[in-house]
Image (cartoon, rainbow, N blue to C red):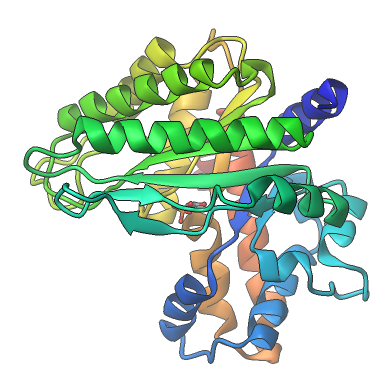
Length: 340
Ligand code: 13P
């Protein structure tokens, strides 16, 4: 465990005005996304699309890191280098999704736990050799009548902690992601309650497995109203509820917190981040680690056509810049300056 390297990596991931692009969609998820724009999903189209994002001029000003899928970490970039080396050359830290997806927890109502711990120590060494310096593991928590159960929170927290310890042992910074899903008709108040319970369970497990808080990044969902809830919490309420939960549960020693977008609109994800990052006196830097809220626009613009690549890169650059501003609490002012 190289603590200096871990500290350096974690600090770089949450560097001022930058955030992380999540480009680690499994091939199945990628297929779903490509289908929305009528693009065939093959190894080559996935490579072309992701390289379009990675090679967009100037995005390195706003991207501290990129989370890759296993396949992408082994593919070639536009200049013929391996993609992790290409990203590192642009000053972007390459990361890797190491979990293997979700399975049902027996004796629950189809609540999920994340798989992928078997053989992880060996895989982690390989990822380090490929140049990856941080990793991601996503746990999924669904809100519904009588769920999440304690069983679900406990099972996921332990998997996250075992994963985090394995990462740190291999000098790879663990990004731990207990995602509370947006789907459902729950209120923001209920989301706050569940997010707090999930984070409490997560940090209790980190302590049980001797995970070093100083070398850890939390990737969390924001506290928002369920997608089908008739009353949708506004930007200030989301910021207030999310920060209250984070202050209660995340140790100040942690180097930073990043957010997922979770199906929020592009602009909501930016506005929520901006409101939180503009709050003075927070113990940790906050930034984004979005997939959809960064990729919706470029994907729709690209549509699999080489002739649209430059416009798609521009759309991606714009969202990355907006979120880079939001991570400093400067997005709203920039918007008003433009409107004036
Ligand atoms: P979204 O921003 O689309 O939620 O994806 C982030 C992510 O990495 C989910 O694991």
